Length: 162
Image (cartoon, rainbow, N blue to C red; front, side):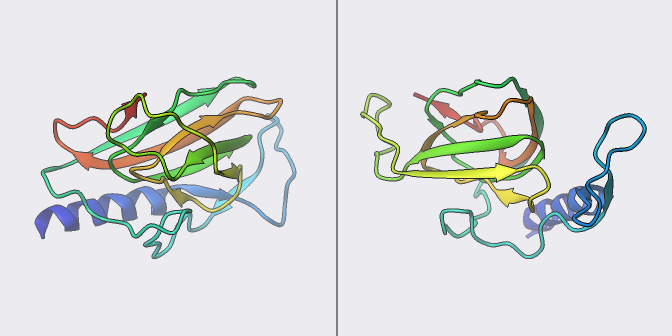
């Protein structure tokens, strides 16, 4: 219970201290940055974009928070995450290509894209899909900047590469 409360508090702190892009004002400030305002990035979400129910880790909780900056044309290798994470796109568009049918057993399984989702700057935050093979890419013509905080377990990897 203490672990679950710690995770919930951390998510609450992170989301309450972040900002969302203003839907009413897409103007840029004097530094060329998009204007932002206070707001919720995610509220009471319990399923990921593929409809899977969120599950807390069963071991000792460990949170890993990352910021990623991907140049146009970048593509990750096929991989999956054993845990879910809270993700938010700050700039650009993140395209995620899933193989929802490939077994997680054995990395040599041939994979085929059978679902694709795109997340854009200013959209609400979303739960990263766990235990599903996928690769992500920046198909846009500007740098993609996004942050993700993984809700994992101590001593365990947050990603399994092909």
